[in-house]
Image (tube, rainbow, N blue to C red; front, side, top):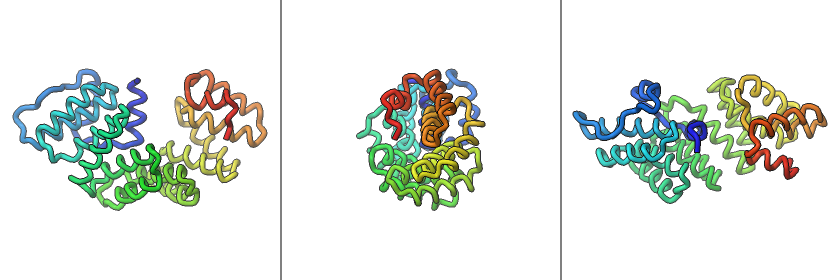
Length: 264
C-alpha cells in the first residue's frame, strides 16, 4: 500500500478538510497526534477528524483510525468523523464497518454533501451504481457544496457502469462545464463513453488533450488510448501506448488485460 494510492483513492471519494488541513498537510510525517486538550468536544472531534483525513492521504492508516477513534470518543455525534472512517475502512476492505460508518454519518447529517458523495462512491464501487447516483444528486442539491463538479463526475462514472450512456454523458459534460478542463477524471470518463458509443475520433481527441497535461499518464488512460488507436487501425500509435503501459505499469490490471488480448 503506497501513499500515492491512498491519495488517488481519497481524491475520488472527496474528503472535505477544514482550514486547519493545508497547514498540517505541509508537515507530512510530523503531523501531531494523540488527545488535544483545552478545547470543547466538538472542536476536539473536528481537529482529530482532520488529522485522520490527512494520515489517510499520507497512507498511515493505523494512525488515521486512531485519530478518528479519538474524534468519535470526543463527540459521538460528529458526522464527518464517521464519514472519513468509512473511507478508511472501505480502503482497508472492511466493507461491513465502512457501510455502518457511512450510514451513521448520513443519519447524523442527511444533507451533508461530502457524506452523500462519499457514500455514493462507495455504493458505486460495490456493484450498486444506479443506487449510488441518488446520493450524488443529493450532494449536488446542497447550495453550500463547493465542488459539485466532483459529484457530477462520480455520477457520470457510475451511470457509465450502469450502461446509462446518455445519462453519463450529461453528467460528465456538466462536470466539465462547472469544473473546467482541469477535471482529468471527467475527461477520461467522457473518452471512455465516446469509445463505447463508437465515437472514436471524439474519444481520441479527449484523450489526447488529457494526456498532454497528465503526468504521469494513468494506466486507465493509456489502456483506453491503446484500444482507441487499435480500433482506428493506427498500429504505430497503439504500439507506443502499449510500450508505455508495459514500462510504467507492468503489474497493473490494464496491462494484464493487454497480455490476455482482452481489448473490449
